[in-house]
Length: 286
Image 1 (cartoon, rainbow, N blue to C red):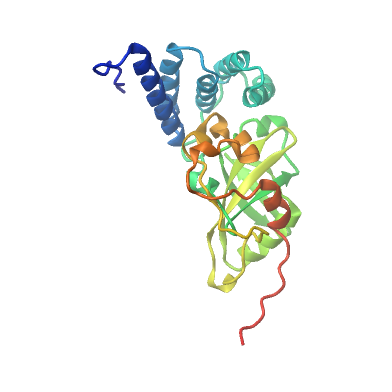
Image 2: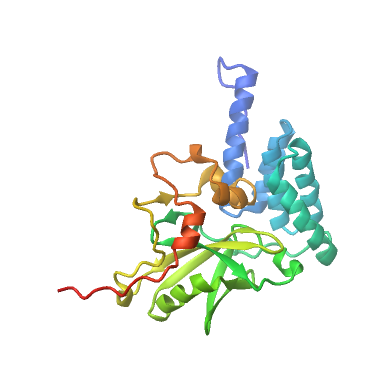
């Protein structure tokens, strides 16, 4: 891959270096969005050759982890933490890697093709998306192989709605959320899901309605008290800045400067509590 690093006519070296860095960051984010981890490693290494940067260290660590290079990933997370001692993402992933390195060693199987959820799943939309926690989690070794941004398969099993990612059972959807969704799924609705954040004892996913069966016409998958149509795409810097930045951006929603003219975000805590309440049966139209 070639990079245009020629100095623009009349521009100072400092200005051009800034432009090149910005271009490399955008390319690194695009590579991660496309799950092109080999290219992401190359671009982030080039960016770091231009100077230390905690975000680039985090992105490089993420790409290496996805390629199965766990030992090297930890080195770069540690570099990110050294540059920014308050970097929660680096700190959290160093802890996760500590567990996985003991169980799996320095290297493991690269992420399978198609294991990442489409970007569209992480677009919050009133009535169409909701957050849910998981319970009955697997052991840390299994859970450490799953990352934010991974696709989640939802599997109805009696009164439970099980969640699976990368071939690993990662728990069951919170019963309150599952009860409503199971009814809608039984009547033909379809849903997609992705991991937004996780730890050894805490996993959160976002669930999106992808198809509404005619039998469920008028039934909202995720009722909420919000009075506006909310649509928030977690794209560009927001979605894929380390761990696709889902650990922090979907929880804290701090990067609003990346989105313009989109509207207000429904806070996760509102969605959690209000998205799965039972609705009264619809009145027959007279």
